[in-house]
Image 1 (spheres, rainbow, N blue to C red):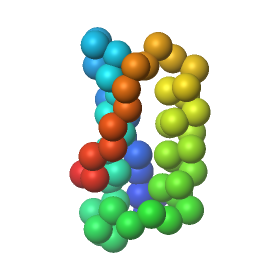
Image 2: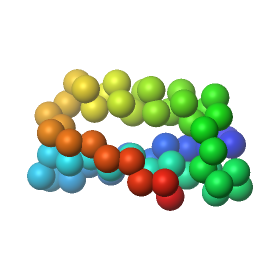
Image 3: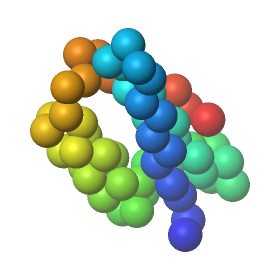
Length: 56
């Protein structure tokens, strides 16, 4: 995979999404956008009160 979105959910209702594509300095590509879309869609269905992104 040329990029990945890592998800961490904390007990306090905060979710962190980490972009992990160091080979390309975390540049967004089709794979990263698809991963973000899936991750954000899943968070919308959960009891998450805040989400943040942290580039790897």
